[in-house]
Image (tube, rainbow, N blue to C red; front, side, top):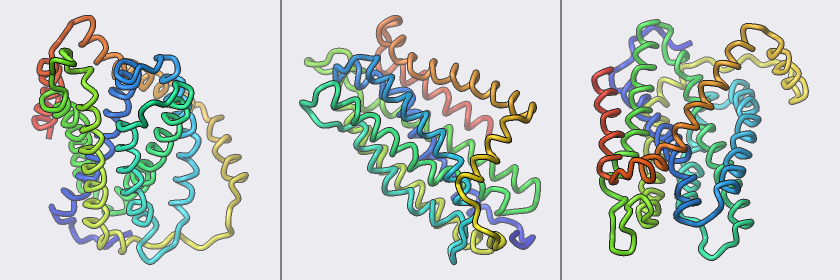
Length: 296
């Protein structure tokens, strides 16, 4: 563990800013991909939903693998930062590709496109998110400092997600004579892809560079006999037999299923049921930013 020297405020701030990337991608992928591909691109909702669900399943399987590799990596940059640096470019590229798909492709072709890009995008952000989350207790042994790190992490996560939503509805989704309903203007989503790509790339690198010096102080993992992925999965499956973990797993499935349902349907309801303008929907997102500032 690092020495007991207090963390600088700058380090905490830069560490937290990395969550702008995770927050922005989570909201963009969870809330806007379905309506973009279904209502704007004309792909049946069942095809889009199936591709997104499959990408989430693959993402869930890949997470333990990424965590295992990160925990056991030995390098001069530490065991977390190589992954954080590696995540920046593919995360940004997939964000852009997700909202700038090829034109003229069939629905079947777009199914595979959505599946491939969404899966790669989620794996890429996890290359950053999992190691950076594991870095939190490694940056300091002090309880209060760890709490402060998590405060900044959650704050910037909320700001990233709700900020990208506010920008989308206030600025990007403009009604035009061709698209009187701003939420169906494809140009706004294409611009979201560009802005999101720049934001995620910058946020990840800011966090990685800002915590690199402190991360080098973290002791390397102990050298031990290399564990096969088969052994790793057997240990992981053994965890599923723990009753406490089963309760947490059930809670997580129910909670995030409800959150995902709300996120994917909110724009549909606002557009077609409540018939809200983009500005009105932007206000609903912006109040979350205000709440995050108050909570901080």
